[in-house]
Figure (cartoon, rainbow, N blue to C red):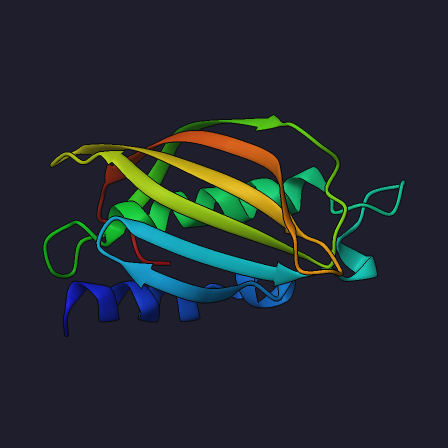
Length: 141
């Protein structure tokens, strides 16, 4: 199994992404795009996408982008991230585009931008994340 196939399989195993309705829409070495359609159960009290949803999408886009550059079978865990919200999460879908800024054997530094797709098809930048991912073999549960 190639590493990109390994990443796709790992994404498919994520129960939380299934609950959010997140879809892996593009994957290449060092890049990952995840999309999530708007639903009322993903909102905060103003009826906008909840910041936790946008953060989760960005974290996953960074993590899977980093994972795509590891040796075959390699896994990652988030070490830390910072999310800046530039605009409200208003739109019909959120699209997180993650990329690796600096890969490493142990730590990879990543960025993700989260755009909100509007009803007319335009995309508006709503959030950006800087993240550090660690190559790891988590204990199975």
